[in-house]
Amino acid sequence: KAGVTQTPRYLIKTRGQQVTLSCSPISGHRSVSWYQQTPGQGLQFLFEYFSETQRNKGNFPGRFSGRQFSNSRSEMNVSTLELGDSALYLCASSFRPRSIDTQYFGPGTRLTVL
Amino acid sequence: AQKVTQAQTEISVVEKEDVTLDCVYETRDTTYYLFWYKQPPSGELVFLIRRNSFDEQNEISGRYSWNFQKSTSSFNFTITASQVVDSAVYFCAFPNETGNKLVFGAGTILRVKS
Image (cartoon, rainbow over all chains, first blue to last red; front, side, top):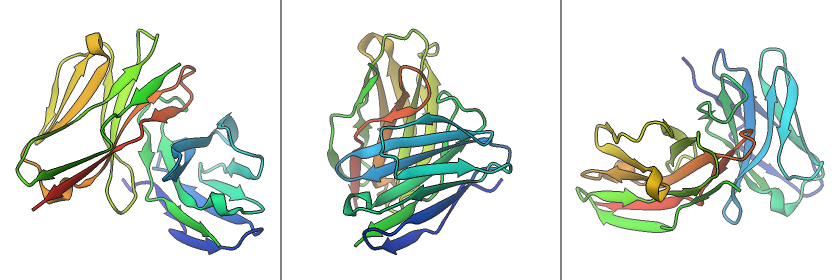
């Protein structure tokens, strides 16, 4: 089975721009979660999608949004980028939208905001 | 509140040494799951193990072993005969109170020198 894939792997943007990251889950997995990883804050939960619905959301501003498509692929969008948004964005998929299910992570998208 | 503590920020060992990574958790739940992930320099979080609170048997997988002790709320991870390829950041993770997201510890950086 193919693992979780994320595109692009690297992005460089400037302040004020917006960015869209993509995640394709493992085949058969319908839950997709997004995490932000920074040296200062560690791994922080952004949101989770299941059956095209956002089920949970972390403590992030409204500039961070996402969606899920009928094939379970997910995108996250960050608008009006700030320098502090520079991070590794990790996507994880699981069969069910419950954190007791094992989440399998993709390679991440490293976003640099200049 | 659920909490995961990895007190060891960084550990350096010489190849072939055994090393134990500590993880201490706090919960009021009687049923829960614990996870370990490895993050090599490439950035991808690699799933290592999931344990439920009903099973306190130690688990061994090759050079990896896990010691789960409910009495001390610890879920420690031991690498036997460490290798340079074991160099990575290791995270312990635990579902939050509502079980809708994973809470990660701060991670332990393991450096294995040849």
